Length: 141
Image 1 (cartoon, rainbow, N blue to C red):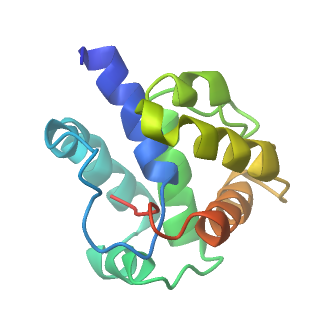
Image 2: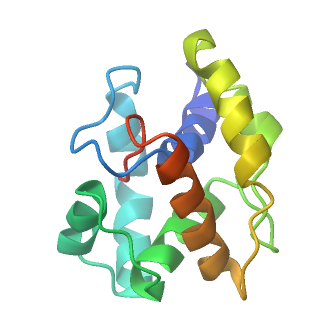
């Protein structure tokens, strides 16, 4: 996987679910190293704590800008959302293993474009939709 694919893959990883406390086995371990700097920057910019991220991993997603803007920030860092908070579904789909393609297409069809009052609220609505449809593969970095 080249760097660009890895960064794009990270975007989909951010959209993945919340009920799994560890990353699914299909996520390459190098992703975590690749995102560390942007994760720290986004956490700092939005006042996000690791405790909040851990709570989301445990299934508690609240419409709180400190976590939803963090999610937008990570996707934006890798150009996987536009200025209006819309996900680039084609780029996301290109990064997933074949075993998840059909399911991911269904999720993207049902969850995008996300409505919201701003980009952070759109991320909350998107994440809530994805979490509802795919809690077994959803997690947050």
